[in-house]
Image 1: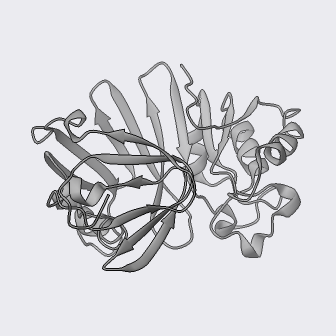
Image 2 (image 1 turned 180 degrees about the vertical axis):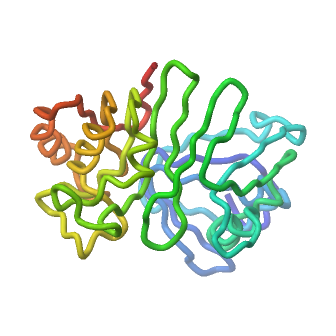
Length: 264
């Protein structure tokens, strides 16, 4: 791929390192997992950079024709209403726009509607979504509970319960919103950035401990805990060792993994 060429295919880096040059200067290097070529695909159809293989590389090429024309898609995106009374779209654009993202929310293909919601119940066809505000450092954050009237799961992302006190075990309060979301859930999906052995209430970085999630599940009557948002420097073997010590808990505990599918 050379700067100035026409093209709109995308490339996924499977192995190796690829250097990105623009206007004769090196801009970045990318490895496995990187998606390259999106600017030309989304914008002008002209390559904005030259790619150079630094090491032997293997890539998957995805022809632009595979994406089809989705200008007729209709999507409604729900997110916490911004605390500063700005629009949901404006709040999303603060992170989803150049230089963080190649396009703004308004430039997405199809018909998009961005709605800010407050804590409470939202009907989504046959499903019920319960949104609850949970403490988190740096911005307004919601946890969610989704139910079809028979089964349910709760999702509590980055979560800092120590903001409301140390709670029964020093890991944070079992506060009302968390208890309501997790109440009787078939699965409680919860942030587990920390474990009790390395948890420091004064330096949580807006995250909870895995043991807090288990204590919350017991208090709320949730049937299973699925630990996610693992700390990025933990290896698989380290996570398995840490989780092994939690599997004697009163509720089943599992580690979330990419590509996993759970049927309720």
